[in-house]
Length: 302
Image (cartoon, rainbow, N blue to C red; front, side):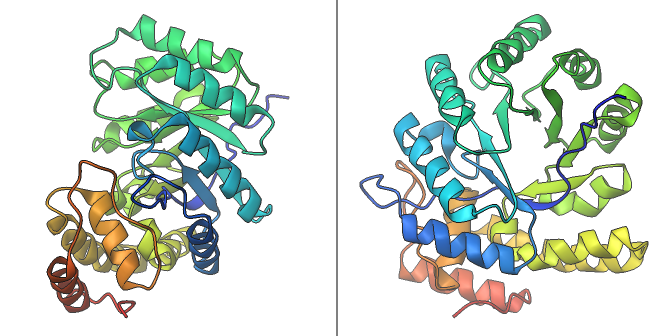
């Protein structure tokens, strides 16, 4: 019997990485944030990704984050560790570190963050990543893939431990075609927060998103309503979510992580600031963000 690749479902925040001005991990914040998210009904976390600022943090800090996440997770849900990095030696070190750590899967951006790679080079990259560990691998499919993503995913699924992808693209026809690969035995996770209900409608098994950090219970409500067949309710909740997402995107001077960490500050959680060279939100910035969040129906500002 063919093994199922559908390992991850439901709502999984793309977790922020809390650290101080010296890039020291705020371990207490990791625990309190995970506790809060689990109370909201999430199924686990995607750590050290773009929202976790993984690509601009040291391998050492990313390893510390993974260790803390495993410790505080305590088996309550799944942990997917993003190990992509501009330097492949860091990718290798992070993958090997994850091997016996207790995470449930690895993920990685395609290796063309700074320059284009051919499909052959991308396939070789994920094949080499898979050679370091037998953990399942989720491809991180973004607009950085400039070729036919469906054909590419078909090739990547031939790698035994590649189970699917985090689909952070805006073409839901593509998503549906990826989901039809391998007779449907492919784990497709929706990426764009604003279109979660659309991803579910086109076959996504769940969602991984940045704003799940502050809106977990609302995304869980979208997922639950959709699973019960109440598409109208799911869409209405999504519309409410999108009003708040618009506010978050409108602040932080184009840096989503800055706005997310600012929102967490307003909620009473010390997630630190966005990584340098991002400027930090001052009291006036936070006051403006708070006013707009409240006006959009976000009730968790202190």
